[in-house]
Image 1 (spheres, rainbow, N blue to C red):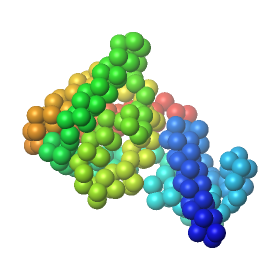
Image 2 (cartoon, helix red, strand yellow):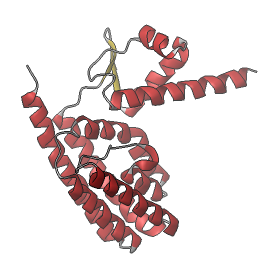
Image 3 (cartoon, rainbow, N blue to C red):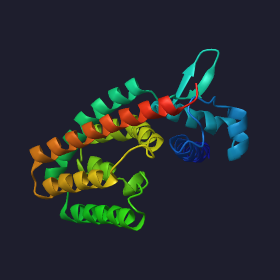
Image 4 (tube, helix red, strand yellow):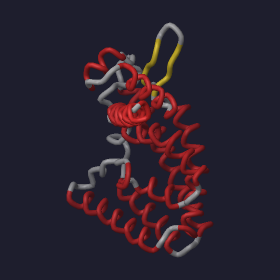
Amino acid sequence: MNNLISIKSATLSEDIAQQLTNAIVTGHIPQGSKISEPELAKQYGVSRGPLREAIVKLEGLGLVTRTANVGARVIQLNIQDMLDTFTMREALEGMAARLAATTMSGEEVKSLYQLIDKHQAHLDANQDDHYVQQGGNDDFHLRIIHASRNTKLIRLLTEELYAVIRMYRRHTADQRSDPRQALREHRAILDAIANHEGDLAELLMRRHISRASHLLKQAMEHVSVASPS
């Protein structure tokens, strides 16, 4: 019975962590805001135990920081942290793309082309409005990361960087330009993977993320200037 309770508690805390992650990434829980355990426990209808476990998970994801005498707060995005994060992302996702060129199955490649076509259709139907940077199976980058089949690389990118990367991408989505260019780059990366050209896939992925980092920096500077002091 105790084991059953423990499993239920772990499942509940994971579910709460996922809901809180989405709320932070989408901005429903604002940057820099204090995490109030009583308010969140009431909002989600849970006890403080699973909620605390969920908050610990968010700390591990880099979405929440905790300081003495202050408590837990949502991170505040900043340009230097973004640059540091994307420098790591560039190297790691470049490696993932190179590995995927060897390990990705034909069915996975076909499915990824279908995802690109879906994103293309969104742009065509919505006057080049950015397709939503989604998580899970609808994220082009995440699929390539998992296709690398390297468990340590997957853990580093999905458990330690992915949520914060999504937060940066979402935060500045309205300021970034030319979504079709990003889609063209995605297709070129996938072409290299489909052709088993690992070195080219890595090069194209690194260039793609480097360009994204540059655009994000410009967007964050624009947001900073436009925001009231």
